[in-house]
Amino acid sequence: MARAANLDEYRRSKVTIREIADLAGVSIATVSRVVNSRGDVAPETRDLVMRVVQEHGYMTNRSARALSGGRTGHIGLTIPLMRGDYFAAILEGALEAVYEEDMRLVLYTTLHEHDREVSVLERLSDGATDGAIILLPEECGFPFVVVDPRIPLDDGIPAVSAAHRAGALAATEHLLSLGHRRIGHISGPAGWAAATERIEGYHSALAAAGVLPTSELIAEGNFEAPSGVAAAHILLDLPDPPTAIFASNDNMAAGVLQAAHERGLTVPGDLSVVGFDDADLATILSPELTTVRQPLAELGRTGVSLLTRMLERQRVEALRVELATRLVVRESTGPPAQR
Image (cartoon, rainbow, N blue to C red; front, side, top):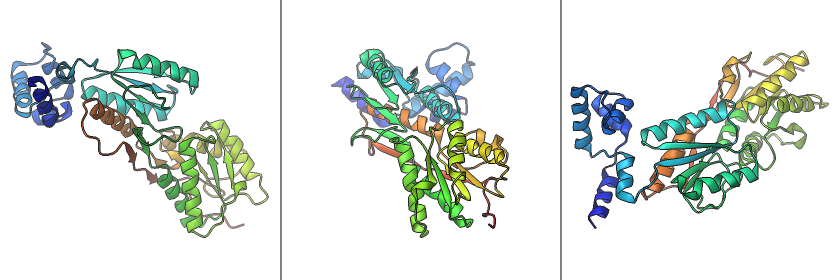
């Protein structure tokens, strides 16, 4: 009973290492060195940090594990690929949150291969980790959180995602407000949850403006730039081509810019282009890309935070967390040219 009471007290008073650092006026690294009994901290700084720690009942996850029955302090993270801004930003947010929680991250790549995903989840659930942040859920019998689900999930599976519909709605409404009515869309792969929700947002904006959606104005891509080039050419070859194209990510939007250049079209003079993600690429392109900003690092941070609360058996009000997106208007959009 004493151990349970201590654990309850810990859960009620838990503060993060970032909050302790802010209160003490030192870095997170300094707090970590003090609570882990490292010797490379000045005595007066150590005393200050320990005073704040004691006043606020801060306890490292390592100590909490001793109370709660010996968790490993490791969480798994599966990422399909280790290239590109998209996955790097999510990983960066997860790493920061894991560091603040005084935990360790076990990283695997799955290459979008189902057999590899299953194998990785088996490895993560064999006792080496306490839980996992994953992209594609499998029933694996241990705590996990899905970040940016690739497929629709069953109720009860915890997930963190961006507001894909709202972002696509804002992108399409922006083009409509400029006067565009022939708006093409380059989608992600069929069956992907994000791709489906972005098409829905695109359709909703058109319907609200009284513009009849047409299937000929949607071309499918695979989130890579070459597919954006190919899809743009398909759309621009139509007898009545679009005056604007909304691509489902920035890579494919870059492909649209390339296709426009190959045809001698100016952007935004002849063709307006909008992307989705707001990766670093968006400000390197010429013209700079109007796009929808996803809170990528915050997806990773929120996934770790949700998983940590589950591991500590704290009450979780919402198993589905949707983070807001925001339209960022730059140079690649303008009114349609007169035909």
